[in-house]
Length: 259
Image (cartoon, rainbow, N blue to C red; front, top):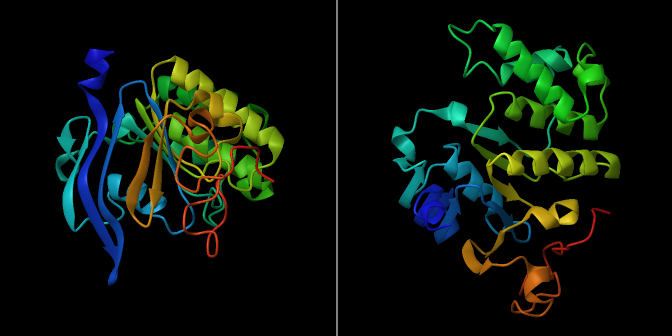
């Protein structure tokens, strides 16, 4: 355990970020260690997605330091070690493509000269099997349901066989059957030692996998420790699974299944 804790795969120290003139992150510290599953919780507008997007370089920071696998983010180039699942969107972004083609695009970071070889195709098949979509490999993505789209996005991230998974609201708007498939998929990845950072609105079926929860409020870390349910419903200030001081303008944080 000491060795694991000495080597964080993600480290944010005093990170600040702004969207226009509005401060969104106000000096947050966050670490994810090897083999750890960390949930980033908070009401809408608390800074969860901005924090994740700052890690992968989609949002610039105005202060602080970010490291990935011990390397400053602006010098990190080994992105095949990182699998990223964005907030729910259409898998192909309006471009005609099959399920297999979308998932194969996630393997290009490991392909030599952009050409998929036997091992690459095997990894794509394995990723599709993991999310229960192997039988839809040749189907156009625009024929899929919302939950199936999300499975495809996760398979795309898994195709590169990453050491670190970063997932932004992977369960949002997903049907119960897909939630359960995604939870089982993630459980297998964790068993293989993959480190995971999840942005969640509620823990749902992922709750048993969560090692630590980091709760944000107004761009600051309110809590970093056991998930809310584990520390008791009222252990966090105002935490009735509702974001503190934000009940009037934000949705609640629940630990049950998505409604």
